[in-house]
Image (cartoon, rainbow, N blue to C red; front, side, top):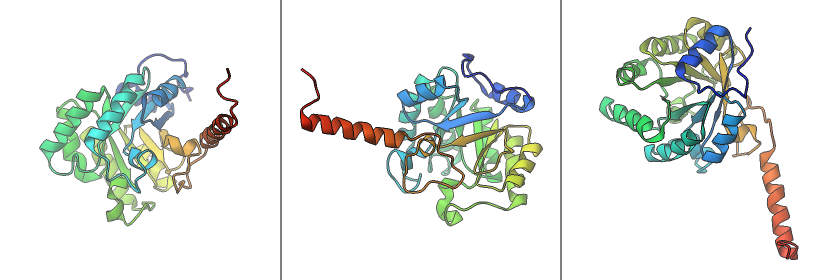
Amino acid sequence: MTASPSPAATERLTIRHFARMKRDGRKIAMLTAYDFPTARILDEAGVDCLLVGDTVGMVVQGHDNTLPVTLDQMIYHTEMVARAARRALVVMDLPFGSYQAGMDDAIKAGVRALKETRAQAIKLEGGQAQAELIARYMDAGIPVMAHVGLRPQSVHQLGGYRKQRNRERLLRDATSLAAAGAFAVVLECIPAEIAREITAAVSIPTIGIGAGPHCDGQVLVLHDILGYDAGHTPSFVKVFGQAAQETASAARQFAEEVRAGTFPQP
């Protein structure tokens, strides 16, 4: 198996690189980002894809789910992230309500996403029913990352954040969206063996989140891996750092020194 790209690599990644990575057996590393300085750090660290997720509604805005996030807010955050990225592929989530109302509104939202942010692709949730929309996006020159399995924008319809186990439906959804032209598909909260089967069945990269080790890549929410506790950390998350503790420690030290009169120095 070919080694993963070096973090020092400076070539700008595109959807064609992602297709090549799947063919070569190279894993894709993907994280969420919502602002310029964080995106710059992740990009320089060698992360392959920066997803400006509608998870901004939960980890930044403090909502219980992603539904309140607006298209204008997503464009605002994505523009900052895309301006910081030099190597990573930047993908913007289309938020709830921006593509469900009709084909024309959906195409307009996709055009705004690329035109106003410099992102290279959009991501949208949904199964086989979204195949026609993805085909229309392809005709409009808008690359699409699909998203099947647990779909956070459908949390009320699904009855909560539950693992999805319907093998036939998941396979049908993923293969239909790949055939429609999606360049990659996120598989969220599905059994590992089903994810393995889907990964073998489609020619496009699969990006897992809570879907086991057999996908072509993995994505996590940045705040989860940094130890920010937003009230619930999914069981599949691995905490790679303790930024929340470091931030709290620095803030306490600052406050203590201000109160003691030791900061600032003369």
